[in-house]
Image (cartoon, rainbow, N blue to C red; front, side, top):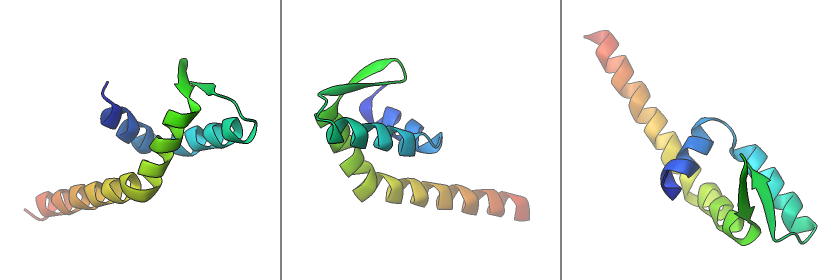
Length: 78
């Protein structure tokens, strides 16, 4: 799975908060990596994932959800 697909899947599944908490703890204790879903994630990579999601990813996902809701509503009205 590509990086963006993995990130959006994590947001969609509601797992991002857990990921971010693991990242914050790894950063707090100066760990170079942590385990996420059976994979080793480098702390510096997780930092960039969290920055992206916090700054852009959640906004884009919210726009996507809004568009889907509008399409669902339009199909119901037909």
